[in-house]
Length: 288
Ligand code: G4P
Image (cartoon, rainbow, N blue to C red):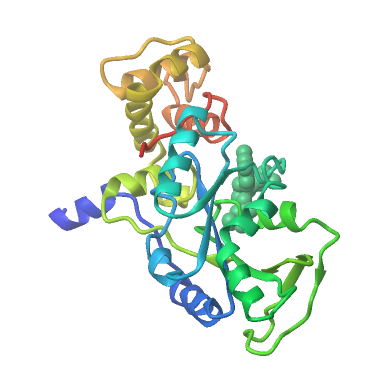
């Protein structure tokens, strides 16, 4: 096998699909937007964002939502919130699935857009709603968030001049309108580590990944950060190498293939599912 092929096989990939189309949609609409609401995954707040949004959204008010904060380590949620605040964004921890934290966004919008609202007021413009766009990488929770935030009661305000045909504004209240189509960003990773973390949280197609390898990589990371959680969940001790620990998990969970052979793929699936579902405990895999 060529060296390059081998390297490609062993690293984690992202297939960008309609990336250019999504970026174009955002560029077309950015001029209409006052505020960018960016969702990141609180378990990997850096790897789950595309830094191009900083350039694309230059001059706009910014809110960063640490979504899936229920799955992340509360201590690091606080640290990441401080980190993004330090970068000039307004930040909230939310759980889009239950709606926890979502209500507080209305106040934050007013805060984030204070300068714009003040400018409007000085020009004699009153009651012009803030217009916001939700952005984030696939699977970060954009649709769930829009549903939780806008709810069923929201009324679409219809097309407005300058908005890409078919785009609609959801009127949330008299002071806020949301573009109904979220901007999809693709994660950008120069290093394989970021790709690997995206694979851990399930934001990569599992079909292009060797599950046993991914599970061993996850075990390596968890061993450094939350070593007790694996012992507690599966009643196992750490092996010398990750594959040994995965074997212990396979035994502990009765993952058998034929006869006495351990079904490592099944064990890997159990571990990844447990991690993604928060059953290993709340974990944050990268630190500010
Ligand atoms: P997207 O539009 O950005 O692509 O993401 P989407 O809303 O489809 O959410 C992706 C998955 O993440 C969904 O799970 C959703 O329920 C889950 N999710 C979103 N926000 C949160 C959160 O704050 N906490 C937790 N724990 N999960 C969240 P799914 O497995 O695809 O669907 P479902 O089984 O939950 O219905």
